[in-house]
Length: 91
Image (cartoon, rainbow, N blue to C red; front, side, top):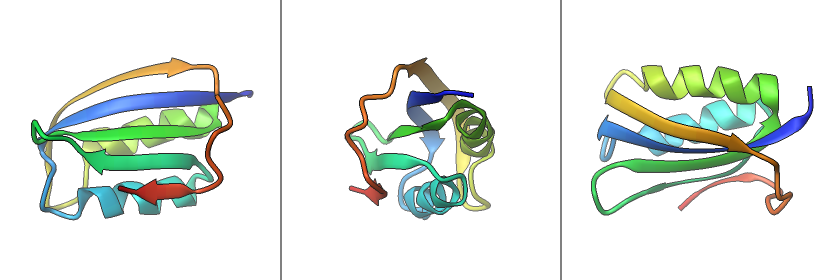
C-alpha cells in the first residue's frame, strides 16, 4: 500500500469529551502523522498521512468515537500526501 493523505470533519457530540486525545492516541498506534483540532461549529477536523490501510482503520476508529462522544457523521476524503508532518499533534 502507498502513503495517502486523509482529511475528515467529525460532527456530533465530539468536543469537551476527550475526543481529540482519543484521535491522537489512535493515530499514534497506527503510525499516522498530522493533526486534529476543534472547529467553531462544534465539529473536529482531522488531517492525517500514512499507509492507506492504516488510514482506513483510522476512519473506522473515528466513526466509533470514544465512550464519551457521540459521532453523528464523518465527512472525509483521501488524496496524495504532502509530507508536511513529522508527528501527530493536537491543536
